[in-house]
Length: 395
Ligand code: NAD
Ligand code: MG
Image (cartoon, rainbow, N blue to C red; front, top):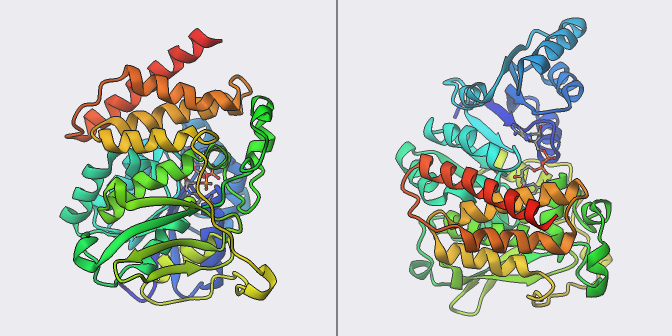
């Protein structure tokens, strides 16, 4: 790597995108932004281009591209504007790029993130859905292309930091018993079950500890986020489902743990702020200031832990089921979840029925081996259409 790291931020206008650019701004000597991408909020993207002067900006359609070009011309910014999904893959694989922050939300992030992997980049992975959908293929490409994959999800970043430095994908060989993924439990950890029927999108998006995009906020409220993270941990660390346990920890200070056979448990702690794992991955193996305040354990006072309630959070079991089924099942789970969450956010599906849509989609779709990307994306498209028709039948 050169002394200045040349960076692409996929999903620059999102929550992770903003935190990434906040860290980058603190270290202008270390990072040069080559490309920024966004799907909406074109005005925000124009402002980010003015601040970071990337060579490229990528948007979805020609209409947005025209608008962004006009805004940039007015502001005297020389960034070249590209449009469409092929352009996302193109900027993720540019020869002059060292690192790619994969922070698009959902299945839309799969192809551009894979393009970065295939080009052998240092890939900072926030877009967990890409790994959930195509885990085996994704990890095989990481090996083949010699890409460096660094987890941004706070739990996986914590596990990465708590594993031996030379961990090579074999828990047993390193004397590891289990990975303990912590979860805040979201906004409804203690809400009486009879009130679940009237949960609104605004309530579901008001996370007690983390400020995030709307989709992952709903995933946190159903705890499907933790389910997706179990699958993510399985692929990232080659850990069997039985060796990944979820621990509810409402303070969100301990970000995950690795339990060793000698009785040791190694954890990573910090304030709940995504700039910590982002700074860790951006500078790895060095350490840089992230702007996050030092953890004050005296002020926090106590750390609590509890077992997740399976009846309250049925999405957790659905995720374990998809992981055990393997093949295309995780892609089907992810697709059905994306459809159900979008429907809930549009006020057309009760919160408590999100899990029902996912279960019914998993029940009706056969799992096949995920041998290539076309099979995975085919399963994704098919599951979306099945989930949508299930919803129409119920409405
Ligand atoms: P967000 O909704 O705030 O931002 C998403 C970004 O992706 C935006 O820039 C948006 O324009 C872009 N985008 C959306 N749809 C797109 C499409 N179809 N094509 C191209 N670009 C598209 O989401 P976020 O909270 O920043 O999360 C991003 C990813 O990081 C998700 O996969 C999420 O699970 C993961 N993650 C987020 C957090 C967090 O604290 N926010 C923590 C861990 C992991
Ligand atoms: Mg997480």
